[in-house]
Image 1 (cartoon, each protein chain N blue to C red):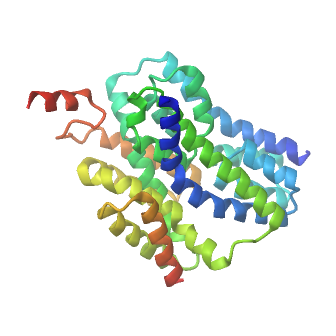
Image 2 (image 1 turned 60 degrees about the vertical axis):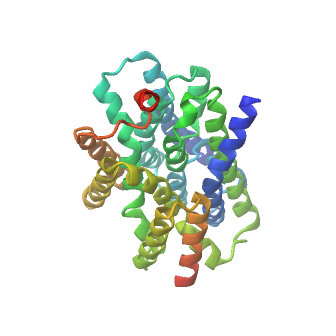
Image 3 (image 1 turned 135 degrees about the horizontal axis):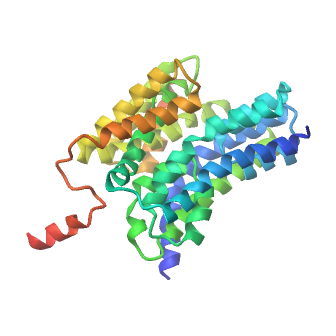
Length: 244
Length: 97
């Protein structure tokens, strides 16, 4: 029963990812098909690689006949940020059994990580892994089904709609960030630092590395900012309330 | 080299960095400062994911991303549900396009 509840909560939490993924996945499917990939190839890339930016890049590189080593290296660089995100999420979910932790990491993307890390309460709840499992599965299926639709049916989304939905995932990131920075100014400083770093590094190093370095540096500086409030995860929050 | 083989290699170099932390966390006991660092990574990641990427929603017209982003900020400040923030920002972009 608890598992069922957590799963349903997870599906609701993952809804904005689905909304953002489907139009992008359709676009990917269309472009990959135009680049000469078969339906099997473009679908297996979604099923196996499951990383938007890397798939767009990989498709382009395959189309222009780039070498295998080049493609694989570029993919590694572009997706290495998921290592940092996974480390953070696994720390958050450290109480989960390994048989849940390991499969969950496979579903980590920028978007699923963002939702999962802001929605941190289920990590302390009974069968909370069903919550994260639901978010990740919903996002994954949206991505895979969207790319099949794109490859199969072509451009079914009107241009104006898919362009407008291009803001969807950014709006989701913003909506996830704002409540946290409102209650804790330290998070605001960290996020703004990361934006500045990412903007600056983008001029000097590859986009993949820029995002990794910006994230690591900004969060590292963030740990030195003294925090006046107890962190949300902290058990002492509950204790304090009981005392007062 | 067959394309499908390249795709499986792309998958391998993507999956391994995602998967390794599950085993690291299981085995290594980190000092508490490292834990505090990992706990603020989401806010840094969100910052880096939003900017400057939001400017390229319509690559040749960066202001569209700015307008959509501001719409999302305003809606989020008013504690509107996340789905409505996403839809609201999309509607705003639809009319600005």
